[in-house]
Length: 398
Image 1 (cartoon, one colour):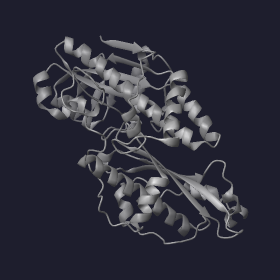
Image 2 (cartoon, one colour; image 1 turned 60 degrees about the vertical axis):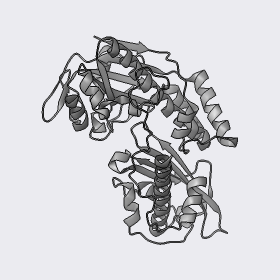
Image 3 (cartoon, rainbow, N blue to C red; image 1 turned 90 degrees about the vertical axis):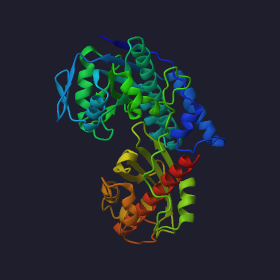
Image 4 (tube, rainbow, N blue to C red; image 1 turned 90 degrees about the horizontal axis):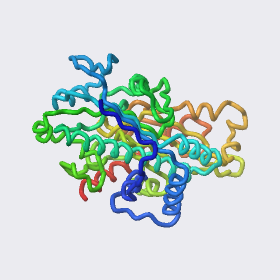
């Protein structure tokens, strides 16, 4: 039975991949503060990061019309089942990779200290590390399979399209049967801790002729590992599949959307094809001499293939800013911040539905009234749609 463990893998994140994950278009060159933050995050991880990966061959699996059973545990991923069937897979590799808990702990400290830029760049570097570790596992598996006259299929993970993330704890339980190099925990929601971790399954097939004819079964399209001797098709970037209309009709002026996308919005593409976004809103209170206030909007989108569904959204004052304390409803102690945090318009809906969302129009800069808060969510989500649609359009034409 094949089994590999590496508790000190080489981590060499390509600058182009890091820039891509930061949300910049292809060919972008970092400069100024952005370059400083990118260098700082890389140096911090080089000195403090503790990456690792582990993979082993499952003792058995079988498939029926409804599910996959791996070592007796049932999973319901239709996509994984179809891939394994199409390639006549005879074996399955279970894998876990992690950038380590140290990165998550340090990023949390930076956020608590009111340094969101450092938090963001460190978080994104952690995602880049996870991507590289996953590619490293894939390369090791390709090396092993090639010597056996076999081929490795693309990895698939809970949370990807057609594999419910709630099944992640089951996969983790299988992986921990023989122990992992370091601790990973799965929450009831399916999220992992440390969050910069990934669990995956790789199919293995002896039908290499069929494998090479069916290009959708080749993992190389999702692997940016340079110089790989086993590459069969070119790497396909995450935005190559269009799902948003770049010529959409927005309720907000497109000049404003363009400016906000550049100045206020940060994008963090995830390994599963989804996107995490951070938008900063700066305004003023309507009374108390127009005090400046600042809020962060965090949005988590699902994979592009599913239309970028809104998986999570939340709004809260920017750490260290106090302008919100001068808003009338805050002063009246009506639970304003709790109301703001609980409001999640369009949660679970694809991002493009913001274009047809009928919402209140309010020019108020404060957050006291529901109409004002709803209006701001519309601005944020349209800016996010605008930015992603244009990134996709540029990437496909390049």
